[in-house]
Length: 231
Image (cartoon, rainbow, N blue to C red):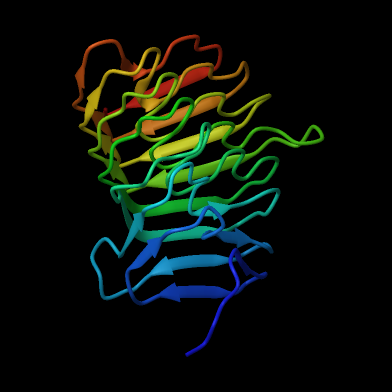
């Protein structure tokens, strides 16, 4: 049996395919995008990919990416075990500050079926998605993804978390939906609050058919631009 030391790094232009379901039982059980063009994917024989079960408190997210461009994550479905929760600011698939200052990153065919109880989180991506770095703006596409879990954590989002696109980042959301119950204060079905000025979010052919007590499709304090097309 091959033994691996977590977290696991994926180097430039390398494709890693996960062919069996994963149970994540430690906060360091995640992948690192370690070079441009890295790809992490579930088994291609699965319609919506491999199952990942988060079964540890304060989990930071499945993939870390700091200033790495043209990466792809696809075909994963995530849920929470009895001990599983997100860390504050985390995303289930993408960690906090994913893809800052870089372009061409793609997240596709991923889904979330667990409840988010922590603050400042996102279903697919956490806080600070594609924020700028050293004056370089970031961009990302999230497509064919969904979240059916409930959100009770404040300042969170069904697809992406708060503080997205700082200083001019661009986020494209295509063919996605959120249908959970949203009760977290200032949380949104698609986007968490505090979308930064000059940020651009394009939402196309997507919907948020949520049950809500305090939240909306887009969280509070929106300073950037949100374009809704065929929503």
